[in-house]
Length: 546
Image 1 (cartoon, one colour):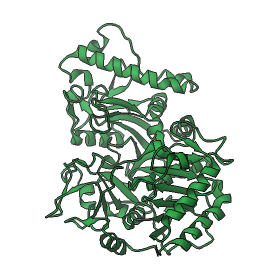
Image 2 (cartoon, helix red, strand yellow; image 1 turned 90 degrees about the vertical axis):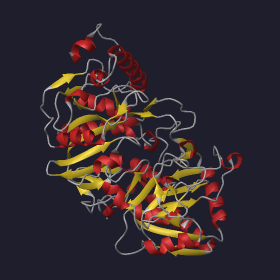
Image 3 (cartoon, helix red, strand yellow; image 1 turned 180 degrees about the vertical axis):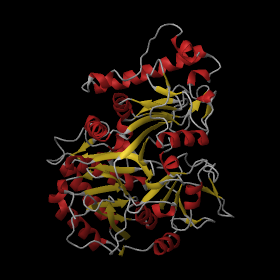
Image 4 (cartoon, helix red, strand yellow; image 1 turned 120 degrees about the horizontal axis):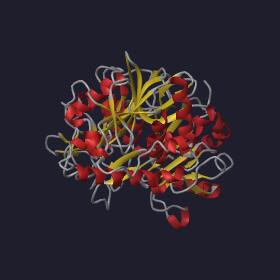
């Protein structure tokens, strides 16, 4: 096995921290089975069982990631490579060392749970990880989300990356150099991540993702925030931010699921980073997402889902705790899951967006330059109520569909995508899983059955050379017909009650795209020119729709 060589020098330091935790812990529970972790969670009062057998836990005030509390240590490994700023906040080495000592002290006398596993299905590229948690249910989360070894815990001398998760530790900003009581601090030289002050288990998953996103590009592997599946027509990738449909659309009974969220693209093809899935549960329905519905059973972990105290039945419509309700489960709970999660080079790439302004077409074919533009833009919408202070839909641009997780400059990840598009000639599409007929509150969300039909047509190659209409604002190539989809919904301006209102909304969104893309001034002019225009001859949209 080839180790993640960027971190090789720090293995001894992460082992020393693990030894310190071992010596001070009340009891160390190593590599417990799923039933044992569930028993421990229940006996410790951390969680409860639902009527399907899933374990349900709540995470207190932090019901999602805390990006403002995430830091990377500025050291010789990272100093000249990391894209420092609001996303990648620097932490001095001595500050991290003092913080690590305080975390060890906070864990003293407590029972700790240890999971040893891997990130990366490709055995040549996978990263050994060791996750030490204060909560049994967090260990179960890691057990289900990462790749479980077949032969037990890691050997003592293996070069693993250590994640230490102690939610009861509350950081002190003045003392610890943090922004709040929560902290997620990664020292890539010491091969160690510290998580404290938050009970949200997703911080464990995304910290490991950040590690891989730093390491793998230096080994000519393209890390991606996407889901992936495979069928007779080849491998497909689904890029998109939370809520756009990555997990839903990739869990297809007609295709093998490679993975639902994080992948690498190497010289031999695509591979899953994980051994499980982390699906959103809000408004979950059996008829819409039967694979995910059936995966919520014994061994799965529900986060912040409301449960009836008498029947223990989950209520997926209840968002009283958060709209970010989640379920973690091993990938083998999905029928047709491919294990190990590996596939060839993608034939089809889909960029998913939930456009709450009702402007973008349900599906459109992209040129290579347009694919690069929309990859760097990473657009979707924030809806009212999903974040504090958001009272109306807002554009949300997240570079490469995952800005909070990229330690390197976004243009580095875009370069890797461009090289692979050139080498493997994948066809790219932009798929709007959001609104048509008007903006959020006026129009309606595109029916999932129609989105699935459009995706199936794209994967089958039916849209590669089909007749299209060119969107006069965004320049997108919109198919004029898709099997099992009403022609009337394909051209967005024809679905609005007022074409003038559509023109105004399209121009407004185009301006937001252009403003956001100013930060990518160094990319090729052909990519910059592949974005939307903000002016066109009077009535052009109307004539195109006629």
